[in-house]
Length: 325
Image (tube, rainbow, N blue to C red):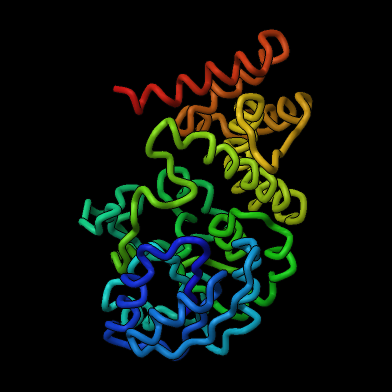
């Protein structure tokens, strides 16, 4: 089991307690953090022995590369600081471990006070075997790659792709899922074995005021998506990655001019339009199903005429409408 704790400790006690109360205790616990003292106090409270690595500034994808390097078990189950395992998580997942580089399950949602909201509705209600050939169809309608704490990752798989993971900035869940498709098939089970906390994560848009922070996240995601597109030659993987890249590319192209971020993924108008043409040609069906691509692509197309600041404000207002009703 691998715990990842950077900069947020409010919910870590609950996360550790969910490990200590497992019906099948883990063979190993490794923790990556920026504050070893705080972490060890809570681990000791629940009498959990763990290897704690204090490595501040380590990007999230690189953390998974490091987990692969230090773990001695066949599979690792990641858990971020604000999420919770159900008591039977390890016991259930163990029966699925074997050939698949990645096993994914469903989850339930909780709020910032740990009250249960309900199941994650964008997950499939039936078991699935996802391959590089069928992933783009399945993941058009189901949340395939989100939330690494719903993953069980083969340690040898993490070691094999560590060089790619070290090059990425932030989009770890998408990269892990994509690389697992490159390696083999992903097994999905609809069993709800965890609780996902809404409202505390860096990639959650719960109000318009949080949009600037999310735009900065999207910039790093766009970089990572494009890195995968350039470095993986498999045509099926490219078909799977392109919609996600297009989503993040258009978001940052439209919003970077009105947002201050330490890192900005800047691409030319020509690159945006060329990527959009490739997307439209390959994904006419997907185009009108999700993510509001037509509006974003249209605004990006007229940005040189209207100005990126004006088109950025139009898109921002479109996003914010859903939070002011």
